[in-house]
Structures are given as structure tokens and as C-alpha cells.
Figure 1 (cartoon, helix red, strand yellow):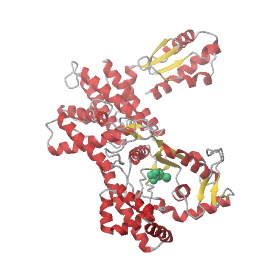
Figure 2 (cartoon, helix red, strand yellow):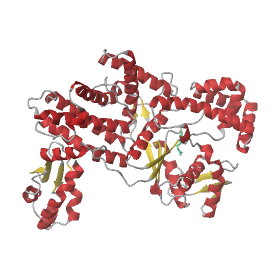
Figure 3 (cartoon, helix red, strand yellow):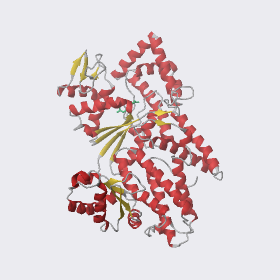
Figure 4 (cartoon, helix red, strand yellow):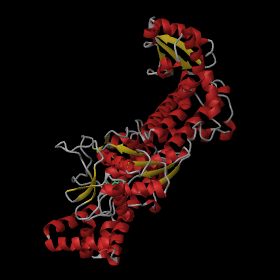
Length: 580
Ligand code: ARG
């Protein structure tokens, strides 16, 4: 709404301002969303104009108000308060906007010029527990994929799993010691951490085991058939567990999206060659390094990026450089997104800089680290299980579904068992996702069962419940839902008007949320739609209004609310039950 309101009123302001002798560059940037929602939708603060015109801001605001009022008659109420010109959209204008977006499948949301994006997300490590950081990456990444596709982009999902490196020597030896079947069993049930720990313990305490492990790494890198087969067992069994988590979460990731570190092996020597051709590869203490410049260690010396260690081994950064070559040159992608925690900030900054210096990508703006904060428990510590171990995601999600089941039975004891289970799954998973997505991405997020599963708070169940309520209104209505399309929006009651503002604002907020990779903006708006709907529904009779003419209009408001919730939650990967 704000966007349209600004667009439509700018010509009138332009005229007024030029008659005052103020050039566009002096006021256009000031004209925007009002900070106090109750006062206005859009405002122009005149304080900085006071210097130019040598008059008080109040005076200027009053004059501008008189100049634009007539022109804006069909659009907004114009007022001036303490040096601000305030515009508040008129109900008739809101009603026209609602009529425009109501029949539109995209509810007024535009598409972007289509680009190809690679979204790198989830990326757990083989034979290690997927931790809550991977959960955030999976949930945020999945939303971004859905959002970009909705905007008309081509999106390639890549699950950059950690499936290569020296630890695989000890992991394979441990697998052989346990026996393949036993090992597969342990990994497949998700006991990844204890498998890893056992291998690690033997590696540090048993010289013979450590020696075998080192020989195994050499065999793995040399492409020995049997070793590769055993390595594949480790990857497949871990993926079996990760896939269970993905399927519980209902994310889009599939086996075809896996492109782990191992898949860039052949490119690693090429990275070295190309860096050296560019003349940026240096030798430092026997290792091949690049100095991107701008980063320093604690001693104040320039920080190198190690490309190839003295023993010939490659680094995490090297495979990320190879990965950029692959994404840009093989996949022809325009934008690379990395949904990875904030602790890897410096890693990505350095990788993007080196990739740009080396000409692997045209400029560093092609790649974005979509970073996120940590997951904390309610006392502010990093989330751990009761035993102080890394939490198993599978258990965490199951627990959420169980808790949702309890909450749903309390709320609606009439649901039969099957319905209740379906609803509990949507609510339990939706709650975990929404709690994560509604926290500003770069902030730490507090994992709090009570809050995320509450039916009347800032939660998924609250939104799902609002949606189910509207479904029940339409079940009780005797007409056909399609009939209401095209009917007029008659906005008289303040709560109808307030809800309409939120509905009209949806398209531009959604677009902004997508373009900035900030799902929380959409989350907040969905919450404000649901809460203004609740107030509207409490105060405005929908099915038996005093004035029959209001019925279709109010039903249309219900319909639009439901569709916006459905579209918004759908983009967040959250399902909606029709009854709950
Ligand atoms: N596997 C890594 C980790 O668990 C994340 C990989 C992120 N993606 C990348 N291209 N580096 O920390």
C-alpha cells in the first residue's frame, strides 16, 4: 500500500514543491512510510526544508498541505502535525486497491527480472550430528528458495555436505572395526555423534589405529576402489538419517541436490593453477597461499588464505573457491547465496574477495553470505540436550510434534485421532520453523517451547488458527466462495479499515522481505494481518451483518486474509490445516 500511495501522490507533491522552489532531490528522499502508524501511512517531514526556505517546519507543512489537498482528494486524508505532512489512505482508495488485488492469483505481488540463483544451504557433515545451526540453515534456506522461485527466478539448490577430508581415514577404519552392518546400524539410527567420538578417541589413544587411519586417507585420495566403497557407505548411511530430518521438516531438498565437498576434488588443482596464472599465489612456509589484503592476525600481520598445505592437502576455502568456479562457469548462475551461520563470516568474505581477484566471478556482489545467529536456550546458552550433548534434530522435531499434539487436543477435543495427528504435525513443525524465521536472521534465536507453541502469541499456531477460523466461516456460509470475487469492498467500520490497510500492504512487504532475504519481515506482517483479522472478526459480524450489503464485502476480507496467510505461510514452508 505504502508503495502505491507514494507513487500516486508524488506528482502532486512535485508540483507543490516546485511552486515553493524546492528541488526534487531535497524532498523525495524524505517522503516515506510514517513512523507512527496511528498518525499516518506516509509522511513528509519538513524540518530539513526549514533551512532552505527559511521558514518554520510547521509553516511549510501547512502550506504544502493546502497545495496538495485538492489533488489528493480521491487518495488520502492530508493533515499536518508538528512539521510533518501526513497522508492517511482513504477507505475508498483502500477499497479500490483491494478490488485490484483480490482477483489476482499473486494477490498483487510482482515478479522480478528472472535470474539464476544457487542457494547453498543445510550442508551437514557426514558422520556427525546435524546440529541446530544446520536446522536454521535448512529452514531459512528452504524459505529463500521458495521465495525466489515465487519471484520468477531459476533456483538451483545445493547441499554442500562435508563429505571429504582427513577425518574420513579414521571414520572408515572405525567402520571396519565395528563391522559394516553394525556401523550402518549405528549411523542410520542417527547415532552419528557417538560414532564420530569413538573413532576420534581411538585415533588419539591407539597408535596402530592412527597409523591405519592415515594410510586410509592416502588410499581414499588415491581413489582406491574398496576405500571409496566404504566411504560411500558412510555417506549413504548419514544421508539416510539427514533425509529423515528433511522429510519431517518437509523441506524441498532431495538427493539430487547433494553436492558435497568431495565433488570438487578434480577442480582443486585447477584452482591452484589459475591462482598462480593470475600471479596471486605465494609460497609461505612451504604452503601455497593468497593474501586477499584487509585481514590481519592478532600480531597485525596480513592474514593469508591457505590454498594448499605443505603436505599437499587442500583446505575448506580451496573447495569453496572450486565451488564458485563450478557455479559460475558450469551452472551459469548470476547470484550465489550461502545460508551459513555468522561464525563463517570471515571465511566467506575472504573467499569472495579471492574469487573476485582471481576472476572466478565478475564481482563480489554476485555472492552473498546470508548469515544467521546461534540458537540459544531460554537461559541464553547455546542449546544442548539435557545430558549436555548436541541435540539430535530428529528427537527435537518429534518432541515438537508431541507437544503440539497435546496442545491441539486441549484446544479442540472434538478432532478424531487421525485428524489430530495430521494437525499436530503441521503445528509442531510449523512452530519450530516460524520461531526461527520470525527472529531477525542475524540475531541469536531463543528456542522456547512455550512461546513457539502458544495459540495466542507470535507463533505459527496463532496464524494457523486464524486460517482455520476463516475456513470454518466459509463452511458455515451457504454460498460459493468464487461468488465473492469482484464484489465491492465497503469499508465503514474502523476495524474493516484497519484490516484493509494490512491487506493492501502485503504485496510490497512480501517483495521487500524476499529482496532482502529477511523472512522475518513477512512473518511480522502475517502476524499483524492475523491480529487485525481477530479484532475485525470480534467487532464486525460477517455472516449475519446488520446491513446485508456488508456480507459479501466482509466475506471478501475474510477470503483475502486467508489467501495472504496461505501464500505467506506457504513461502515459509509452513502447512495450514483447515480445521484445528
Ligand atoms: N558443512 C559446513 C558446516 O557444517 C557448512 C558448509 C557451508 N557451505 C559452504 N559452501 N561452505 O559448517
